Image 1 (cartoon, rainbow, N blue to C red):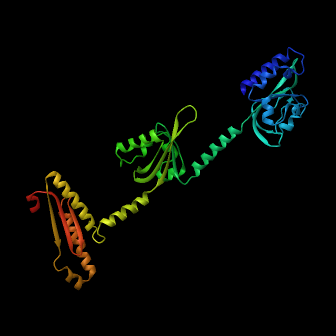
Image 2 (spheres, helix red, strand yellow):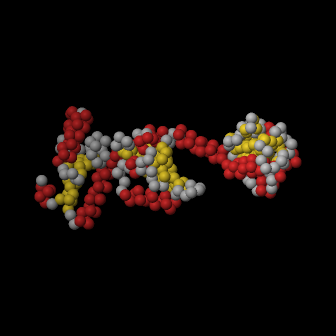
Image 3 (tube, rainbow, N blue to C red):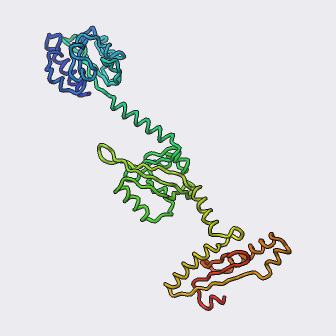
Length: 364
């Protein structure tokens, strides 16, 4: 649009000094103006339209016949386009409103320049363009920014190299990193060390192939504590100029993981003593025996019960019996090697799994 304005200024201003034609714009090659995508019209000193191109007709809905002689303020009610003391108020590009023939308002960008003839201003030439698409894009960007800013869900945007460029307040609350702490740093700074390199390689492969990946990830808080998230990453390719972005949505599942771990532990551990229960003993024994068969090693299984335990329950009460079981569990767990198992089968029955062992090891 600036090129059109400069060209119009030079043509209108330069030629006007060399001609007495008071309607210079109308004498210009109309085909040239009609080939321009921007709306172009000229005004006399009374503010009435003396020339209009096809683009101006199309944008406004007014035909050339209806437009010629029409007051400019009918189409441009909120901007001054007439010369004032040798200048034009809208000499620089400004945003304004075009009032269409149907009464509707169209956002436009407009610029005007004086028509100079014999060193005298005789009117204005006006160039304008429809900026509805640009406005819509700007509003969409503002809306997207507001959604990111106020979303209760943690959001991170990185470039395709993995450098963080945007984080929202919800992410700061989740991770402990303020925007100033993390923007410009690689997303790898969030890794907790829980995952093998192959795990991260699989994520990159999925993004390259399908443009999306989701799954459970352990990240590291700014204070060093690990936390679990459900992470959804989408690759967004820029429409022009190549490149793109990675947008990550983080759902905090740390508490859910704690509850799952608690349920899993309770399912496989004795509630009183904290030792593995019968279910975990059976699973562990199966695994140990399979490994011993492969390694040609030996395994020892010791069954232990307490003589006279019923009498203690009957005479001292169940609290005393429970205390005895807990003390027995503590002593047996302390007596075995790391990797061996002490489990409670139920009542006063315990089992010890020693693997691998040799004869001397069993004796000790």
